[in-house]
Image 1 (cartoon, helix red, strand yellow):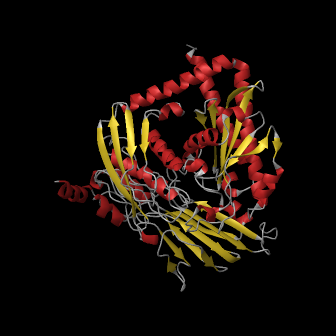
Image 2: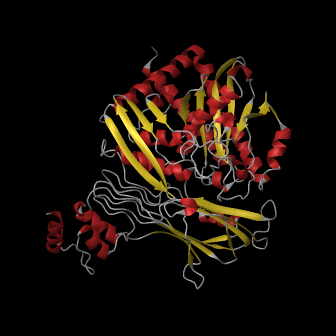
Image 3: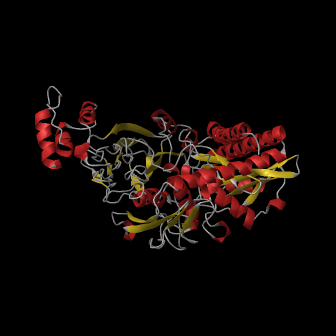
Length: 587
């Protein structure tokens, strides 16, 4: 048994390696979605393909790298076929015949084997990066019905062989994207991330030796498994059910239903999605690798955050996801917008476990929100785009998160498995023909509760180019994010074109096909907010007053939703009227 100090040192070294891999990609990438929004991820694995550590970045990416690596090693490149300097590249969601590859075609995965002394396979350095465009019908998030409409497909292939780049493959990739300059830069950033991981792993082996390192790796995996099982023992045994809707506004035949049964037995837990609707002819299907990621993420949020994150955490977990459903689609169905389902999986599991562990779950959150647009204006942006002068902008937009058992939900925050920061307005305006007009918190939007939901976010921008192509995705436009234990729902989201003008139009659907806009048109998004937790009239009166003085809550809503009467001029609580109102409701 190695020293606990040495084990902790190596554990933190592994975390540092994974974080450095991500930082190298962010700092050397070309596209805004990576250099500003950090839409990339990394992880390191041992020689058996077991995940040892991951960079704390995009949760939905990270947990899929293991299944994708396993697919590569079992279906394409067994370990004995790999050599030092090899790098494997893939973006195929259905590589190997199952949906256990990349989540969607724009997420390119790179795998670099690590060889100690050029002979001993020591592990794998793996990166994933969201590339701006890989061909397909449109560059944005439109409604697709088959995987070939979503861009070129690469089954796992060696893009580097023993350190030499496959230039024919590289040129093929560049000829199948609308943004070859960005693609080239981001692919090189990804290669650099892999190389940093290889270098870091080799330094560990050189410092401590193969025998010691492999013994420590085994201990770390067993340790995480033990701690995870200990945490699971705290959850009451039983079977817990919940269901949630997607495409609740009826788009493309919706709403569709996701169902889960959580079976907790001792230190093991099963997530059974039997009863979930069949896959649809559209891009909202969640590949099994994404479903696995969402499950692992959700469970991680309700157990001790100090447990080292590695494959040991996953050993007590079983996932049943019937083939041909929204949570395990089969080729050739589309899956580009799998996040629509993946986000709902988090709310789905939280809702199921609310009865078992009410002090660890949170209310519903805003869900998946994207807005992306492109346009041409060579007068104000003379460098233009790459192909035809078209330039792109957009965000993975933050909204309101669900309230927690002991505190309010977070406002204007990327939801759950997304975790992308807001790109600076200046960066978007410099690189693209758009003007950001407003970014604000929406008053009175948080779901009322003892702890209120996170507030909604308003984002408004103007097109300053021609031939604009706008793509939008959001959720919960009819069924708002639900509260827990007496907490009230948050607000619905909505999209508005040309708000406040004679041409104002509220979009019928929260997700849709490409919309063509004119120079000067505006797009306004009101995101959903978070649901509340606990009865609103149990909220601390001082917290209600604080929300009023902060501009988050109106005086009228303070009285209507929380039973707190506040004098409009002095902004002081009228204790007598408040007590009368609250006692009447609570009695």
